[in-house]
Structure formats: C-alpha cells, structure tokens
Length: 114
Image 1 (cartoon, rainbow, N blue to C red):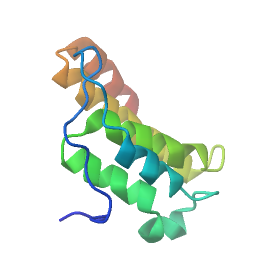
Image 2: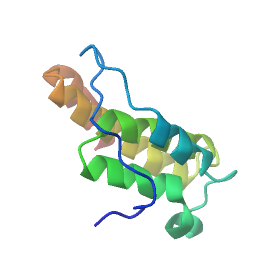
Image 3: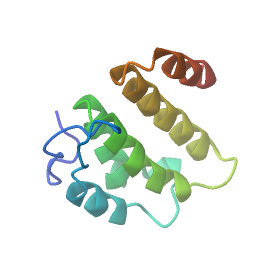
Image 4: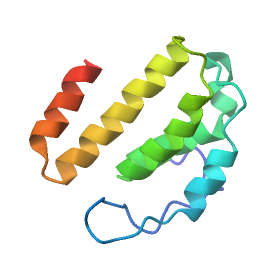
C-alpha cells in the first residue's frame, strides 16, 4: 500500500553509471513538501518522508535517498529525527550499491547503520 499515492513513482529506478537519467519530476515535487523543520511527532503528515518510504518499497533506492535528504536537512542537528533519517539514507544507499554489484561498499554502509 502506497503512503502517498498522489505523487507518482518515477517511471524507472535510476542506477548511477548505467547511462540512464533519473526521472526527477516526482522527486522535485516531493522535496518541495519537506517541512521547514522535521519533527518526529509530525511524521504522519510529512509527505516527503512518507514518499521516501514508497520509493524504497518500490525499489527506487537512489530516489528515496534524494527525497529523504531534503527531510534530513530540515531535521534538528544531533536530534533523533536526523539520526533516523541518516540511517534510512544509508540503508537506501547500501541497497543501491548491492544492485550495482558493489558489495564491499554495500557491506561498509550496512555496518555503519548497525
């Protein structure tokens, strides 16, 4: 089940180095929905955060990283929200590196998240 069905998913999952260009339109729209300040108690209304979840579930790892970064930038420094988002971003990156057959890089990222 999609959490933010009103924002379309990209037409394909971008993989850096593959020669493809990312489908940026839905990502740019989602990033505009990131709140000025990311707060844990507001997560259910944070469409950018929730859309990042939709992206991850659909296998759009690079795209999830891009959207979550906008939410991360709005999180208080050293706050729990920032730490959670950092872990989510690193997980997305690890999954992307696995898809790219860069297993050592993926393993390093997974170790950082644990």
